[in-house]
Length: 202
Length: 140
Image (tube, rainbow over all chains, first blue to last red; front, side):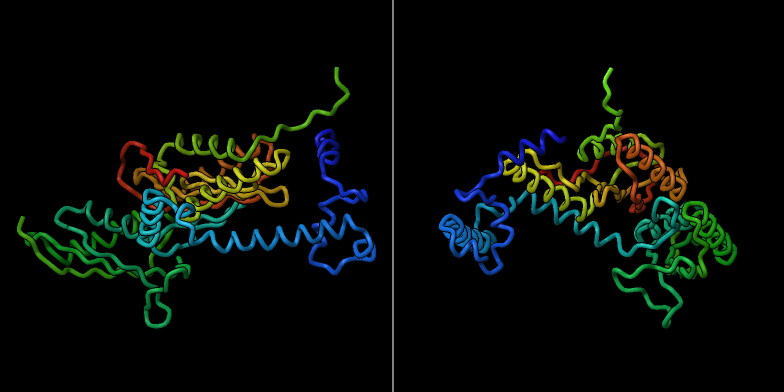
């Protein structure tokens, strides 16, 4: 490593007066020192570096409009696909903080888990599931806001078979959803509201 | 016999990312590492900056960020921070899997000669069992 550093030091360009060009560049925004005012090498180098900076800035300003520097359709579409998926994942809920770091779960993963749990019960078809918290009138937290896992309330809409006993099935459904979510995430839900919005014939 | 003291081998971040990715995907219950906007843009940016740096300063240290789908590694002040985004199989406890992923990542990082800063895991998806598949973000 030391050898590399020595070689790098030797390769660093120097001006005719012996000064390293990098040192001059480091203070290019400061007023010229007494040496830089009197030394023709430093004066010339400062002028050249100022010119280089202005040219670079002009090129950088032009880059956003340069068609040759725009991402291709394939890259753009793929990025947008990832971005749309990220929007669908919704907010994050912190599950646990270990000695190594945090563990979060996305709102989409949680609702998918709830729908899956509901769907394992015979005669129940899970539909829309929403997550809210009790604060400020059971509002849905806005995007980017962390969900308080100690206060998760869900509303699950289902369609049920016309042949089943709805009250008994709803008790079993609450228990099933609560158990599966607890086992998968350690979240104990504060409230599980179920809306039977449709009946279907078996 | 050399008088030089033995030193831990430190490999580059891209190698650690590849090793970590392979190790995580072998963990039973992890279906995928999910690409995010963060991991995708970090990969594109790292690739572009690395390419420029290699041309301008061949002796420069390697990049301080590395990324692949669902993985972002950032090196700062000698500590390596990792963000892992996973899709898990519903047949396994998602939380337990996330903790295993943290431990595995920390072990992999230490074996590579880096010091672990933090390992954050986000469970982005829980799905009913299927064979592990790769969902790929754009190539740069």
